[in-house]
Structure formats: structure tokens, C-alpha cells
Length: 276
Length: 201
Image 1 (cartoon, rainbow over the protein chains, first blue to last red):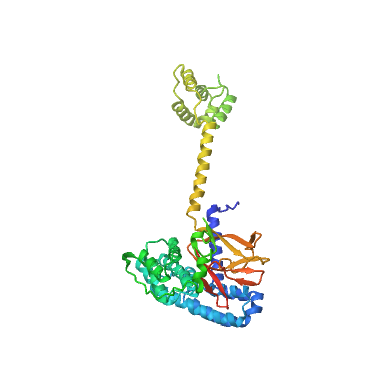
Image 2 (cartoon, chains in turn cyan, red):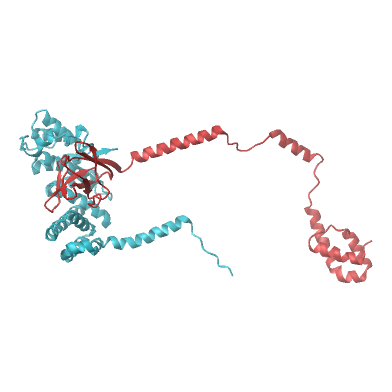
């Protein structure tokens, strides 16, 4: 008797293989930290802090985040040959930062249920906090973004806040704006009608204003008034106008900073030039 | 006149569906009527044969009118050859449409793509090698070596990155020195005593 073989269409077979891969990869992604320490070279250099790192990872996972967040920091530290005690101290700060950010997002209904998506979102915001953005500025931007775009399932509000805060981080680094003025700038940027990719044009405007002899605080006032709806935001004119100090003068003279020289491209905050 | 030996071949032919033998069914019937021996052997088959003959008669096509075949052939000849002719003109048009469609598809895919090519530049006249390391490549400079694009020490690399995200990166000079991008004002504390450069796309 001949057995009749059941034949599946090619698409069904591809789907089956994909499902199997997914099933096997999911547990692996949840064990990123363990896998990292399982590497002999990493174990030799950082085995002493593995238990502590695992403990921190457990707290991160308890917040519905992936421990890949910490694994990424471990990898960065290893590449930079950071001593284990320094790494552990930084991991503790990072863990606290991740939890704080996730809480801020969750409170506003912005944290995705999916751990991978949530972790990616938290990582983006955490980078900005490490880049000089403080909690009040973050809260202001998130609140403004939710008011503008709503706390929907997609991450439009968070993307908006991150875009605005990245501009604020650059402005703060260049011009030394106060926390309050950065907060106002963050709100104005988030609420403005500028698209995310056009937000960096504000840095151009400030640079142009200053290059024409205006003070930094006037430049900020002018920009906020320009982008704010109803021109309601007022800026405390308490900024340092000493253009010869800190990074601001240097950056004005530095061709790498100015967006209008074409070097830093659209984003304006990088030596990276976008070639669309 | 049908003979007894002919009845056997007649029945055999009927069994395989062939009713055209040297004998006719009428001759077969007459033989059975005059031959008790053949009647005993094949008499029971006679009603079945007659039924088949009736069916065959009803199924046989009615005769065609005279000249029908000539008319059909004349009509075919007058219409000429019909069907799809793949002329060179149609082939060229199809190829042109395909090429234009492909080009437009690529154009709009690129236009709406989330990926953008970013050029990283560094002035490092004394450097022997420069790598780019960041969170986009797991801080591994492997495969991210900058090329010296000018004799005065300008290094460059172009890489594709996803839009709508912030990135942190360093240049790694001569394999050991992790430096920030001097053209970028915003720095990110790496927590290890150094900084990275902030990039948003």
C-alpha cells in the first residue's frame, strides 16, 4: 500500500519555520544578560559582578522591561575596557534610570505592553537623561506631547518628546540655558507645528540670531515666541550672554555645529550628514 | 445466412461494444429462431442486445446537411488566423512599462524609507586608524572603519541608520582612544568616566 504524503504549500512551510524560530528565540532574548556573562571573555573580566548584575536585571524585568537594556551597557563597558567596579556602579544608576523612565511613561499611559518595545522606548529617553535632560524637562515634554497627540498605543507622543528633548539637549550644551528655560523650550518645541525632523531648525534660528549680534536669551525668547501658538510662553531672560564662554562661542565658530553649513545636515546635532 | 459458429463471434463482439460485424442483429435473431441449440445458449442475451441497439440508434447523430463541412471550412478561411500576436511593439511597450514601474517603485520605497545614510566625519591628521562605535553597532568598530578621504587627515564613513531615533557614538582612534565627535555639542555621559556624542535622526 502506498502512503500518500501530505504536502504543504511553500508559504505554510516558511511560516512554520518562522514560528519555530520565534518560539526558540523568545526565551533567548529574555536571557540576554545570562548569555552575555556566559561568554568566557566576559566571564573572565566581569564574572565578579555577575551576581549583582543579575540581581539588577531581575528588578528591570520586574518592571516589564528587557534585561537587554543592561546587556547593551555591559557590552559598551567591555568594549571600553571599563573596570568591573565602575561598571557595576554604572549599572545601578542605569537600572534606577530605566525604572524611573518606565514609571514616567507608564503613568502617562505611554509604555507599551510589549517588553521589547517598552525597552526600546525607555532606552531612548534614558539616553537623553544621560545627555543632560533633567526630570522636569522630561515631564514637561511628555505632558505636552500627550496633550498634543494623546496617549495612544503608538509611540507618537514619546517620539515627539524625544525629538524635542534632543534639540533641547543640544541647545543646552551649546548655550548653557537654565533648567527653566530648557523646560519652556521643550514645551514650545513639543507643542509647535514643526514636524519632528524640522525641530532642529530652531537651533539654526538661535545661531542666526546670535550671529547677528543678539543675545542668547533674546534668541531663545524670539524662537519660543515664533514657534509657540499664541505666543504665550515667556522666557526668563537670565541666560548667560557671554558668547565667549563655554561651548556657545566655540560652536558658533565651529563649522561642524552650524546646520547651515551643510555639514551636520538635517539633524543639526551631529557630524553625521544625512544623505537622503 | 448466419451459421452457428458465427453466433459466437457475434456475441463476443457485442460483449466488447462492437456491433459491427459481418452479421447483422436481424440475422442473429433469425438464426436463434431456427436453431434450438444457439437459442438455448444465447437466447437470454437477445433482449439485452436489442436494448443496446435502441440506445445506439438514439445516440447516433442526425445526418449533417449536405455541404456543411465545406461551409465550415470556408468560414474558417475567411476569418484568417485569430489569437494573441506578440508583436515587437507590444513587447517594447511592456518592457518600458515594467522598467518605469520598477523605477517608480524603487523611488517611492526609498522616499518613504525609514533608513537614511549618515556620513560621519572626523579631522584626525595624526591618526593611523579610526573606527566608529555606537549603540547602533553594539559598540563594535568591526566593519566600521573610517576611510581617510583627504591627505590632511579627514576621515569619513557613511552608514545607514534608522530615522526617528537617538543614537550615541564615539570615534575610536588608533584602537584605544574613545573620543566624542568634536562637531557635536550634545554629549551623553557614558557612566564610565567618558562621553559619547548624541545623534538624532
